[in-house]
Length: 279
Image (cartoon, rainbow, N blue to C red; front, top):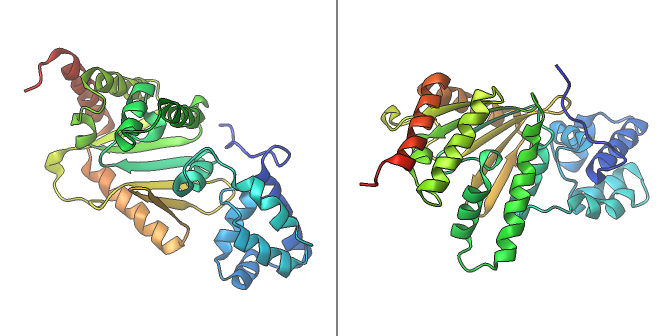
């Protein structure tokens, strides 16, 4: 199996900063935990900076320059690493997602961004921003579709999604758009590119009633969890919290339909959107 995609330090500002941070830290004789203690962050956070899975914010760049005596190198270069086509609250998560070897996601309301069709994404963004210019919506949709291109690789990342049944039933964008969106997911499943389970309504209370859950693992950095709310997002790297979220996901998967039954429900729901009249 091919290894996960790696950032090229010559083409990615984050990878360049990460490689230089590792070099300067080792040159100073510090472990990741020791440098993290000086910055009041975890050693795993330093590892994620070095691997390019986390952004280097200016406040950290300034302190790293002072601690490692790097003459302002990190402060001068962190601005380029912060540029992103994604909203501020999601940019760091999207960049980490692109490097993940595996992604597990629970979605209670919407088809996850990586699985959305153009028409579905457009309907979502228009609902979020009903008065936005069409050019703004076009840019958002283009960024979302480009983000989904990580699935062009035949095997990496491993993507395992648990969809709440509400995701299937809500006619986002209308019945035609919804049928196309569900067929797109089914096609990815049938190509053995993704794993999808549906958490049915009759599963009752479950381990993630409070919202979405996104778990990412990497070949050369500690795992991350991403929690999202309206216009907000939080990346979590604390090992104990990440482990708790992983347990929650396992419980969700255990309560969900099997992949085979889930596929059948997704396809039958798509057909219902096309052929059945709404009640």
